[in-house]
Amino acid sequence: MDLSRNSRRDRHGRGLRGMLVRAPFRGRRAPSGLVEIVAGTVEYLKNEFPNDFAKLQWRVSDQGPIDIVDGLEQVRRWTNDPATMTIHIYRLPIERLGHVRRMDALHERMHIEEYVFAAAADLVGKDPFDFLPGSR
Image 1 (spheres, rainbow, N blue to C red):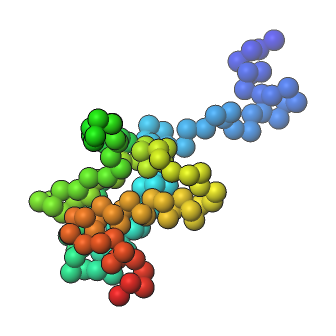
Image 2: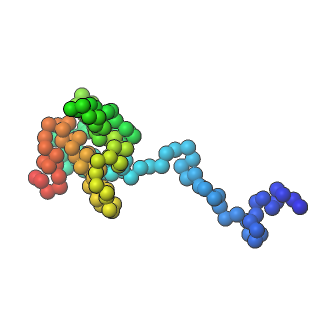
Image 3: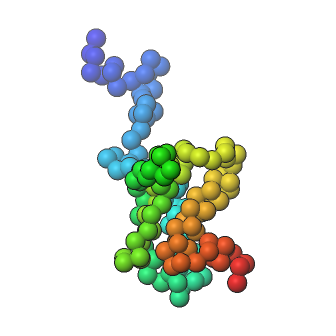
């Protein structure tokens, strides 16, 4: 029996249909839904409020710094840098900490957008509600 020939076929002789476990990104990380939502929210802010956010930049990292507030550790969801007009969003705390269970994609999107609006508004010293759709 020729094992090399048989190892490429399944037991019915049709051959394997494809890899059992695919690696579609081959060395790259899969794009995150959070990254896409952050990018879309930043583009909305840049387009709707160019006077405030024309130069707005953003980054997403897995985890941010831990602060001690009143003797308790708190994990930041975002930070900003006014010198470079950059907001930094931290994925793991937003996705996993301190929120009620989200039931659908729309609720998840709103949860992420909340932090992007908060970070951007803090960057320019305004209230996040000033930048919500229909707030003008």
